[in-house]
Length: 327
Ligand SMILES: Cc1cc2nc3c(=O)[nH]c(=O)nc-3n(C[C@H](O)[C@H](O)[C@H](O)COP(=O)(O)OP(=O)(O)OC[C@H]3O[C@@H](n4cnc5c(N)ncnc54)[C@H](O)[C@@H]3O)c2cc1C
Image (cartoon, rainbow, N blue to C red):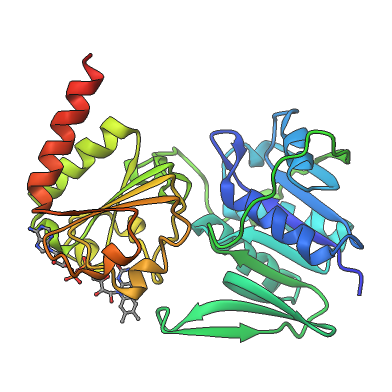
C-alpha cells in the first residue's frame, strides 16, 4: 500500500540533526519508492536547507516560517505541525527521539487522534502490516507494535538507522509556508534560551566520545575525562553507575536506557562492557577500552584494548596529546 511519510526535521546549529537525516532514510525505506517523502522544517530561514534535505532523500521540502517559530516553543510548533500535516495528509509522521521531538510527536498525535510509538529502533514489514520495534522495560525486552489508526506518529531513536549517502543530483520540490500561531493557544512564553554544556554538545551527534565507567572511581577523576574530550573535540558520556553517582550528566547516559552513540572513536575508561551498555555503542566505528581486568567483556568488542589503571592511562593520553599538539 502506498505510504506518504513526513519527517519533521530538527535543526542543530541551523543544520538538520543527524537523527532527522536518519529518519529521512527510514522514510524512504517505508515509502518503498511509491509514496512521497516530505521533510517539514518549522522556523526555517535557511534557503540551502532544502537542497540538503532533498540530497538526503526528501521528495518535497516544506519550510514553515512564522513569528512564533523562530525559537522552539512546543505550543507554537505543535499548532504549526498540526496545521501543515492537515494539508499534507501523510500516513506516517517521523520525528527524532529527542526531548523536543517526543513532546511534539505526542501532542500532535493526540490532536490528530493518531497512534504514537516512541523511541523506535527498527521496523518490520510483514504483508500489509508495518511493525515498529522499540526497547521496553528499560531495555530488557524488544517490543513490536502496530498502529491501529490511519496515520501514525513515531519518534526514531538516534543512531538506530543509517542516514543515506547524500546525492546532490536528486531533485524535489520546495514549498514555503507562513504560519502564525494563535496567541491564546500559547500557554508558555520563551523569555530566554540558556544552553547547558551537555545540550550544546549532543552526545548522539558527537564524532568522539569519551566514556566514564565505575572504574573511574570518583567525580574528581572524571574531570580529567572532560579535559581529554576537550583536547579531542569530543563529548563525555557515562555508564549507568557513573551517571547514578553524579559523575556524568544524566543526559549523556550511554546504553539501552540512555543514548545510542555512533562516533568515529569511542574511548571507555573503567567500563566492564555489560550488554545494556554495549547496546548503545554498536554504531561506534573504532573502540578503545582501558580496563585493569584483562578478562573484561569490553575487550571483546574493542579494536584496541589497554590493560591498565584507568586514571593512569588517562593521564598518559592527556600528556601525550598535549605534547603532540604543542609541536
Ligand atoms: C534493564 C537494565 C538497563 C540498563 N541500562 C543501562 C544503560 O543504558 N547503560 C549502562 O551503562 N548500563 C545499563 N545498565 C547497567 C548495566 O547492566 C551495567 O551494570 C553497567 O553498564 C556497568 O557499568 P560499568 O561498566 O561502569 O560498571 P562495572 O560493571 O562495575 O564495571 C567497572 C569496570 O571497571 C573496571 N575497573 C575498576 N577499577 C578500575 C581501574 N582503576 N582502572 C581500570 N579499570 C577499572 C573493572 O574491572 C570493571 O570491568 C542496565 C541494567 C539493566 C538491568
